[in-house]
Length: 329
Image (tube, rainbow, N blue to C red; front, side):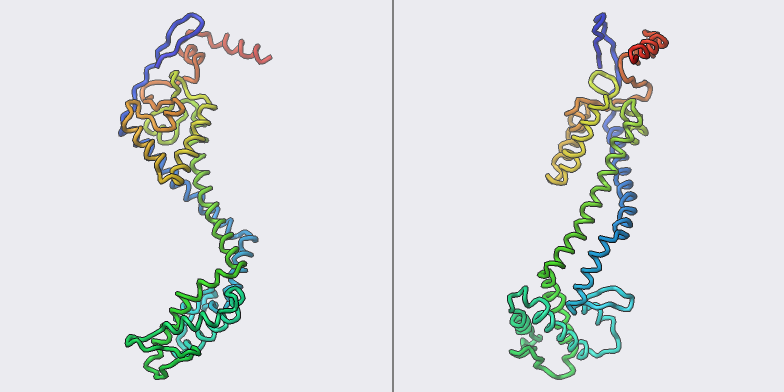
């Protein structure tokens, strides 16, 4: 890398060796690993905060109440809200027939009262149609036109119990989403997690790929770069200026990271391909920002020309400080 000094036309040559591909990827993979780990570490307290939030808990409580009101859910021994199938599977003091009768009562209430208005008052017909489809292995119908049990033998009690369980799990529970309040509450609680979890990983990315490199101002090093003794330099051979580095980070965040999730990981694939194919082994963000990853194992990184000249005793450091103070005045 060369830089021309405008005052006397001299050229200062800053020669940094290129980073070998294996070492290049080693630093990047270490940063990726730390990004994932930190993302999960940040996610844990954020989930605790959500679960302790009064508004969020009020949404959950309202969902539970709607489920209980539907009669398709009950509280089990541990106090958890579970659907009737799971609830009666844990009950030992009732026969299959007694469980089936209770399930039938719940289904009748649910379709004929709880969601009947949302079904344009066709709830009873829908339930009867579902029952009409129920048959045994010999293709014998299990219910008559009024929805009553046809085969009264106790040998069929377990079959009827299984049939009612299927009607609840596979048919009835889905209709609960017709309740506007229930559906909106589900969306709000789900959206809370869908926003919070990605935000924690964006925060992790910002810490590791922006804040940490700004702390290592010379070479804008990530932790992986620090370990592999590499640095990020501008085309002039000096450390990347904060503005250029910020623009590079934003490009990498929105185009490479977030853009990859929106575009089937195409930006990420392009970036990896560029690292392998290009002689400079630049990633997509480095190529766009005109920055380079170099080895600094045996060399120093300089912020600018003045710092370089001071280090090589081409400029008197005391005079430089004095001049800087006078200019500040």
